[in-house]
Image (cartoon, rainbow, N blue to C red; front, side, top):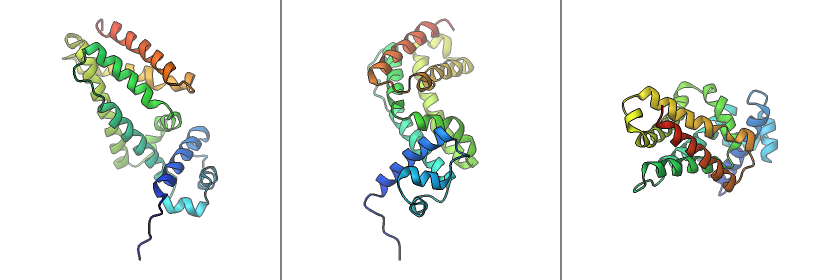
Length: 198
C-alpha cells in the first residue's frame, strides 16, 4: 500500500531545505551530517530520511528550487514598453530584490553545483544559462553597436554585472529593500555609463 503524503509535506520540505542551506553555507557541505541537519531542522533523523535519502539529494533540491525560482522571477520581469536604459535599471533592481533572504542558498550555489552528478549539473547550469542570456539581451539593447555582434564582449559585460550583484551579500547581507534599491542604482549607473565605451 502506498504511503500517504502528510498535509504539511511541502511545508516540512521547505523547512528542511532552508535549514540545510544555512548549515551547508556556514559549516560546509563536507562537515555537515544528516544528524546535524535533522537537529537543525527540528525533526528526527528518521524523519529527514522520509524526505531525502542523503545530503546530495538535499543539496540538489536546495539548488534546483532556488535557481528555478530565481530564473522564473528574473526571466519573467515585465519590460515591455520600457526604454533600454529603464530595462537595465528594472532588471538590476529585480535581481537584487530576488536575492534578498537567500544568502545561504546563494552561498551554497557557489561551490555546490560542481559536487552534483553531471545530469543534475546540466539542469542547474541550464537555469543559470537562461538568466545570463536574458540579462545579456537586455544589456545588448543599450549598446547594440558595441555588443550586438561580439558575443565574447557581451558575455564579459553580462558576467561583470552578475559579479557586481552576486557578491553583494558578502558585505551587506542584512540589507533590506531600500538598501538594495540604492545599490541597484549604483550598479545600473556603472553599467549604463560603461557599456557604451566597451
